[in-house]
Length: 157
Image (cartoon, rainbow, N blue to C red; front, side, top):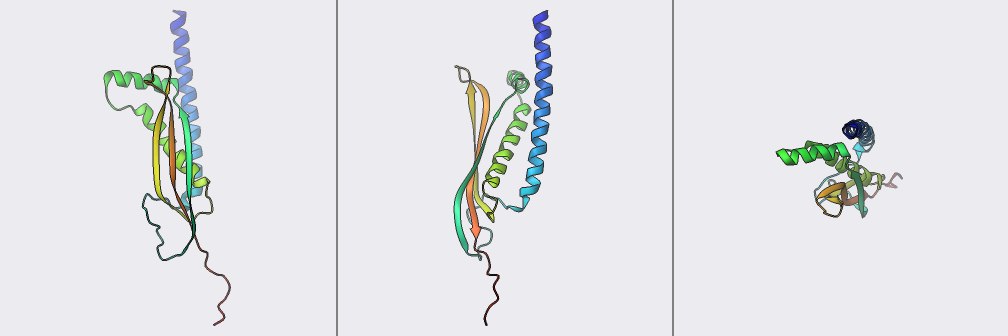
């Protein structure tokens, strides 16, 4: 009986602290997205401003590894048993993708735009069997474009 009570306490603590951490992370993501909204990011292979000369371009990336809490793992195990959508992992992947793109944008704050954005996702297994997901890694990469700045000096004509 004591083992059941202790297990329930850990389950409730996992749920509460996992929810708090997720909410805090989402608040951070929303605040940083508002700051970086001015930097256009697209999966297109060509720049948006085709008439503006490009000064230089560089490969930029951002990545994140987020661990799965025990409560989400328990819910996913139940969902796998009964079948259906694993919603407990959907928020985890959403946070990871958005965080990776934010880190990519933060790595090139003076860029004019980011093109050819690609996102790779992989799971990091836990344990020797390799069938339990322990963490999720998301890598976002693209090409940062820096346009030539228009001359501010007056023309001599």
